[in-house]
Image (cartoon, rainbow, N blue to C red; front, side, top):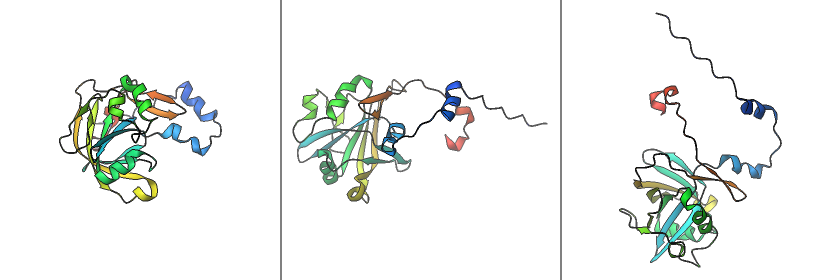
Length: 202
């Protein structure tokens, strides 16, 4: 029995072929416009009777078990000290329905305004942490601070997700991805190549 011939890859599209030849220099400070790691999230925190919210785009999945998420939270943010002291937070995933709210939250300080009240967002009680859930968001991930080794040098927090809450629909929500200069890309068409994956690589 002969083995089936491997399928030839599809020829590159016109846009893909063009991208190989028509390139220009890019300032390295602008690389982030292409490598922003994931959807914009709202990070909620609680410390000494105060709740706060911040908009964040710099985060990455670091491990599956335990579920570890790395986040850059600048020391200039009011949330930085609240999270460092409380050692917990909630990472909330908004959809495009909250676009303007997400932007406005990121352009004011929790030291001066109650962001939940100012933007009419509903607070939900966490099951594990004291930080509130933003119930208007599609998903809420309760987190505890797992590792602080890089906080002082790089403002890099490593959290462990200890409880996750996700709306059953839609399965693929329209999320926001920041490209800089006030411009967002919206998660759009969903494509599947599941058949090309080895089982252990899914």
